[in-house]
Image (cartoon, rainbow, N blue to C red):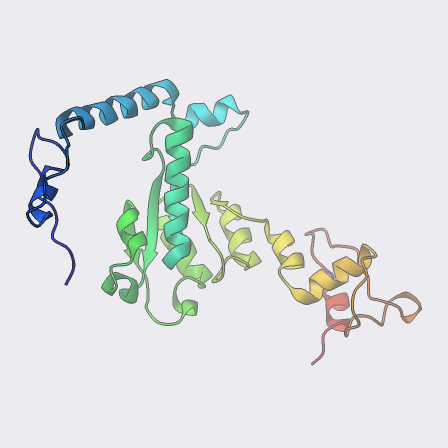
Length: 246
């Protein structure tokens, strides 16, 4: 059935409302506790003091560290716990480093299912854009949808989280090519390490011992396949095909 919220007594001791739940027993001694008014004032003063001592703009923060690309608006291209954790963590960082937890704005993507469930991340974000429902290829794993939402909302960066499109090099390459920062690895790195075949070929090239697999043969002297990365930083297609079983 739940618990009733204790009554709040303006200007009185913060636990005064609990006295009615003691079933006739003596009420706890709260005379030494600060009043709600003084307690609130103290917390507010501490927050203002902390903010004024570290308060700075995103632009100044970036400049002071030798950067030239401030990020003030981020698209969260994920949902659930990943999106919730991202927003809370970045807000905490902004408060600790900039003195303002709202220094960075967050735009969320939400499906009809997310909205119906009143998902936490939709309430934490500054705004959200409803995207097609259904399987993740319609929304969080759809590069075209993510890019469209990012450009229409004029964001500085996209945080992909994990799963969904986070390991798709096309998303990273497309966003970076449009001047939107992808918060994660570059496309070439994901292309090589995000694919098991490519990652194994790279490991063999670096002479890392690997268990036998389809790419253990076909290389020099019929040994493990090795490769020199292309100019784009990826495994050559012909080497990749040699290791692929079809």
